[in-house]
Length: 287
Length: 337
Image 1 (tube, rainbow over the protein chains, first blue to last red):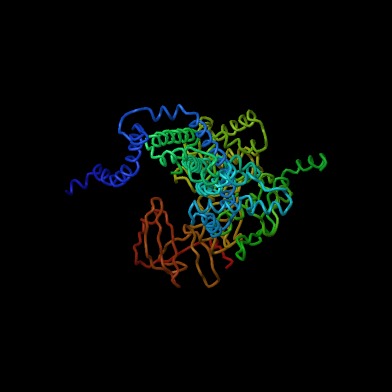
Image 2: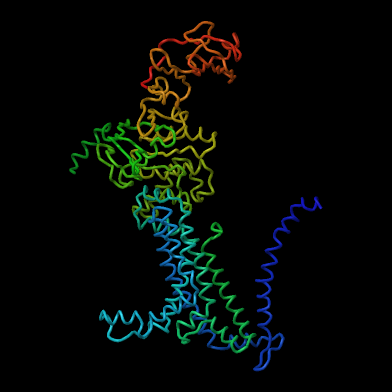
């Protein structure tokens, strides 16, 4: 027994086992199940275990699929751009303009306060604000900026993206802030010593060194937005669709094989997107 | 400024290159890090700012570089008040303690960085950077990234990056502290050689007195925010003015005699049967060429005598022996406090 314990290879395997089992059971197994189910056959009344490509044939044969995937990419791209811009600015302010650590921590915690409530509640709270007779419209009307209520504030792509940005900006702030805090401050002094002004330091030193953080934030945001269905449903008033809604509709109709096939395609799409992103930036140092 | 005036200045080379501190003060809230120091640095010289950590030497350097604001007083370079100019407009360049190389840029781009900031086109700045790399003997590594270099190589890149701005004064913040002892000695020889080749002033902050002695034309010893003593390396070592300098430079005993406090070099103290001061040997340490004999004299003073080995073994002493300490009267240096 003592000899067995001394065996380094064996103890290594033993140490890795618990996590491997957890991941196998809760991550790998469900994905395998989804892939398996995606080949099953579904009729109006029943689901039949089989091996058929008809779910995929239907999926790729329908113009709706392409439209919905395109729409999903559109949400992801706009949300990504907005969260990156806001996230970078907030992180930059926290990391480089707030001098004392106490304030840094205090302001950082302030950013996380919205996360104490659920996503759904945060989303719904926009509705009275953006509605036809909501706060935004009443304020604009009373200031005389507009003559009649804006219709596109709520139940529109605008509302969807607004909610996404609100929900997911923090996922951009945290990794970018983290990377920025690791930038050696003497690099900024060295840049200033070499005659760089504020904008040049930002462009030539801070942005290149913050890229890994931006990439990690991007992965979070893209994955979250592409997998979302509830935000799109609530904020678009069921007028827009993304892939998540496609899947949730299939599930509502008890057409699990079709939902599974869509899920598999979505998973591959997200993996491919992230794979392409990772070709550009090396995030290994951040992990 | 008229062109005639510029020419006139150029002819006054000695004054036009001088670095001078006038009542320079740095306060952080209520703490005074640098207390109204005055000093005139000789042009084209190698000066070491020496002192223990927290003595204000780094703050002084950073104020000269422009990375720390001056609370009071002025910094003059070539007769021009540079105290409030941005770092790049001062005619100084700084080499940082950790080198502060940009990790995402190649060696060549690191060196070319300041020219890129000035808007010099890529071909010209790369050529200039390549010339600078040749000066520090790193041409072969131009395309590497900083973390693919050894400590000594990184230091040379930092040196090239600072020198490409053609500074009148190069400021070095503990440049050798990150190197291993062997490399440290080699790099300090290179620094000295480079300073002589370039003919500009080097101002080097260090806490190692051996480094300062080996490198400096002039040593400025700082303690508690003020300059304790400044002067040529030999003068500072041979004739310390204060007890702090004597102890910090090492190789000295501080003796309290009825006439006052004195510093005396450990190798100026001899052992005899009868001497100026009677003492008991407490430790004997063989150091190869020398033997260090630690003794305890009246008033519980510890006095060390460093004796040539041959001399010592003619008449060896052991701990517990009573000896007389002797010295020549002119090797005593009276201390101010």
